[in-house]
Image 1 (tube, one colour):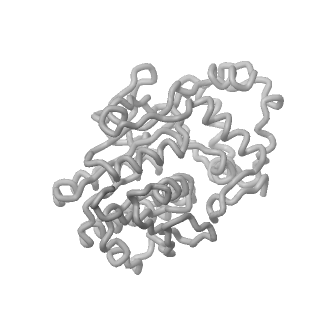
Image 2 (tube, rainbow, N blue to C red):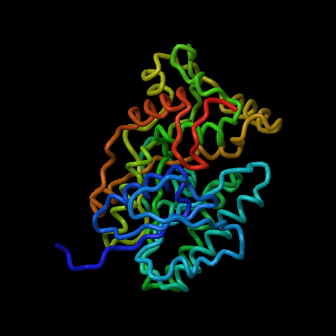
Image 3 (cartoon, rainbow, N blue to C red):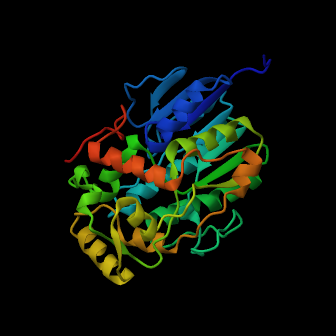
Length: 342
């Protein structure tokens, strides 16, 4: 039996898609003594060894230092995707809020910081050859999500130099899905009036095949396992996280029994831009532009240094997510609540 004291872990954004999976895995880990979940609204969900605190990272009044004192690691997951029409609002939460987290980690002398970066931080790259973690992380400047993720990569570069005793890990996952996130992600990207039951193969006789639309996916629980392994190890730096194979129209068409039909990117972007401009679609055309340019990621470092491997393939992840969307599934937290429409 280990003589080391059980770890105390603080998780920001603990009630969201990734946070709920990370908190659950940590609460089941015998090496973790306690988990403090931070979120804007505390949930009724009560996993073992877990306490909650209500915190708004956009507020300068948040006393993060006190909450971080005595922690062995802070896992920073908090992120706001909306409103996409007002990037100043997301900047306050995502960038300024993250800087408050980093400053509090330093002030409280927390030995480990694990930060949720993203494939969206990467500069445009290839869709046929996978890139490793050395690929530039300047993002796609026109998309707020990518711009914010890339800015925080530069912020952490500075943090690393200023606080060499703090072990900083940056996770760069692909697009994350699970059954319980279906309702939340439908609301974030498709709008709250998009009916989930419409996500049925028989209603999709064809799929738009857009050049450049080839991305990677990952089950949220598999990403959460990488976070857990990072806390337990002594690794530093960035880690790509994705499942195989890459997702494109051919793979989706095979999954859903639908015929891919070539559609020019300009036509698809015009439709998205029109719906976004009318506030019918939350996902912006700028994010669509970024997705067309995202590189595919090589995950060799996560396998060799973390001992991490995804437990589900990309088709399995998407199939589970679509079933969750059809049923309006969710989880017992405010961001993840399940609803079919509206």
